[in-house]
Length: 346
Image (cartoon, rainbow, N blue to C red; front, side):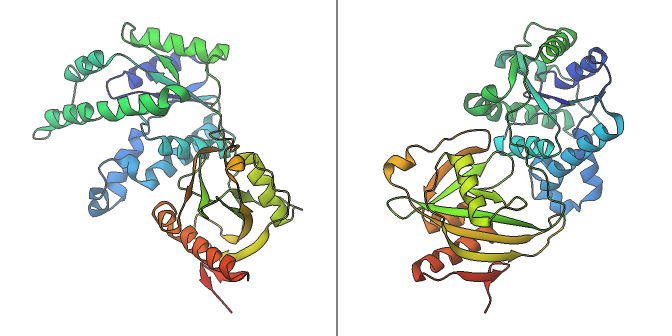
């Protein structure tokens, strides 16, 4: 199990985490800041300079997942992780990756008033060994108050168990967390557990259209980026039936007819991914009543929208967009298409 302690800079996450590991038996502190520091030695300075925060680096998010899983495999028990996460897509990616490893996460939010946050930042001990280091570290913390408030207003309080730490010491806060986790007041995060593939997979996506012929895209909670409704074909399952099942599970829409095949795309392996066959089917047009029955958001999907082809280009990763383009052309011509890495063959 992981107890993830979230909150703005200055909320007292790390000091609380140190107290908490004394209260939860067989628990260990894991601070992902260590990985951020290590990346400064692993990656070229030019690459690091392209991002404003190491959290924006995909390698940081992957290493947080892998390190947490490795520490639990080595030590067992509970991992206490003090780390600010203000972008929902990063939370989804990290917690989804942990869920894929069958690691439950209990998400706690330390939420003192803004005035107290500012007072703590002003009085915070910061490094003085660099020119203007103290000023820059304090300003960094101040600059993150607005993103914190935005996350608080949009998704954070609905996702995490909040504790107002304004009048609490770190020990008192840790005691509250230990009691809430022990009593079950902090449930495991509701996120789909999608096991990571260990070999090539077959995945079936279904394109659904509205009355303006825009295509439905969904935003999964357990991985980054927009996608088509669908998922991995289970052993012994027909791909078209798998697509129908996934559509029903994700959106609540039950297709009456088996969808027609539009595209078969072979996705080459790109470590750490294994690649495999990616199929897209034509699920047909939904009328306004059907669209109104979409069951979102939920544990699998954070958002959905109908988009034009041009809008899809802005949302989808390049490989998925190319697959969509070919599928739309196949739909227009009434003839399925075979692709390799998104390129028609034959």
